[in-house]
Image (cartoon, rainbow, N blue to C red; front, side, top):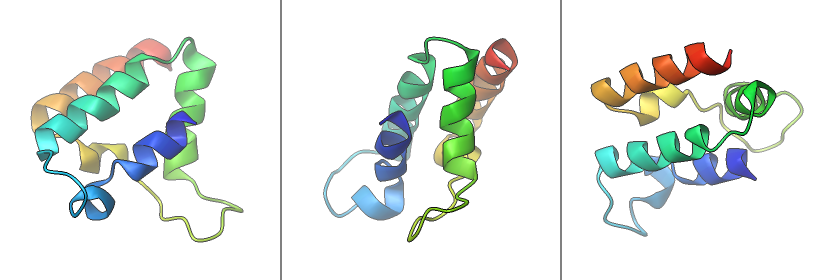
Amino acid sequence: MKVNLIYDMRSDITDWVDDYTDEQRGEAVLTVLKSARHAEEFKKIVVGLEEVKGIVNRDRVMLKELLTTGQSSEFDVLKRRFI
C-alpha cells in the first residue's frame, strides 16, 4: 500500500489534480518512508518503487527524483538507519 501511495504522489500524475509544491510532495514521501516499522518494510518500499519486475504498466520511480536537495540528505540518513 505504501508503494502505491508514493507511486501515486509523483508530480507527473498529480499536478493536474492538486496544487502541492515539489517540497510538500517530498515531505509526504519522507513521511511515508519514516512510517516504516522496520528495515525489511523500508527496503520493500524502496525496492518496490525502483524495481518493477513483473509489474505491467508501471514506471520505475527513483525516490531521489521526488525529493529536494535537503530532503535527499534526509532520505540518505533514513536509508543508512534502515539498511
